[in-house]
Image 1 (cartoon, helix red, strand yellow):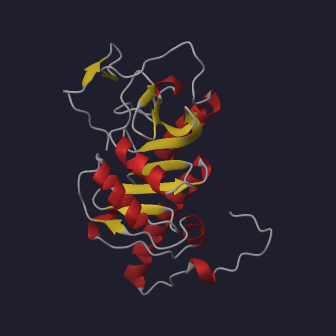
Image 2 (cartoon, rainbow, N blue to C red):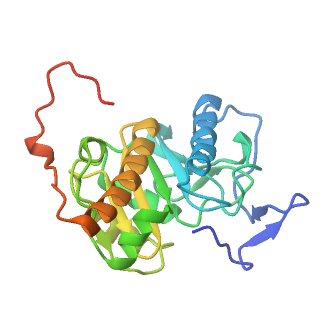
Amino acid sequence: MTTTSDATTTTSEAGRPVGRGAAGSTTEPSRADRATREEILYYCRESVRVGLNFNTQGNISVRLPGAHDGADAIVITPSDVRYDAMSVDDMVVVGLDGTVLEGDLLPSTELPVHLEHYRRRPDVQAIVHTESTFVNVLGALGRRIDPVLLNMVLYAKGPVEVMPFEFSTNADFGRRSAELMGDDVDAVVWGNHGLLAVGTSLKLAFKVAVAVEENAEVLLRASAAGTPKVLVYADIDVPEGARLP
């Protein structure tokens, strides 16, 4: 979700929301290097290309270890900026305490949710939120997404639960989302809204989002034809040294 409030935004000449009183650009080196920003922008555009998002849907963030006076921070996509119009300079750097450290634009409206997931899971280094079709079909039905494909069980690591619908721009929602996901599975569905996927890298978090969407489609179609076989992560015997697909 990417809506913004007129009470907290102004609009730049380019038509982008600008935060009032947020930390603006400085001549000092950014806490988020250019390569990290470029990777975020790549996966934002890739999410549209593969059908996980469109327009300004979804958001992405990456953890920045020790970037806020020794404490962790994150760099996150801005609110209400189309991915085809977004630049690396539009990303916003925020401390895990919620302090905006760098950026001329407002951070994603779901910033509080990202922060809660990072606080609960120190292993999480990146978050990808998507609003893809088949995840949302099952989410609207309130149906858990069980793993029926290898990629899903390898990347998500288990069944993905569905959180009942509620507005998703506050810390309380974030805490409930993080609690439902737990510590062993790497995704959670927000009913009537979308998916939040996490990973030890942005590449892996994106793979989780892709795998869950593909699995959701197959699960829906297979269930219409019969009873699909559900895979269990603990039962998968991955040969030593094998690379994930």
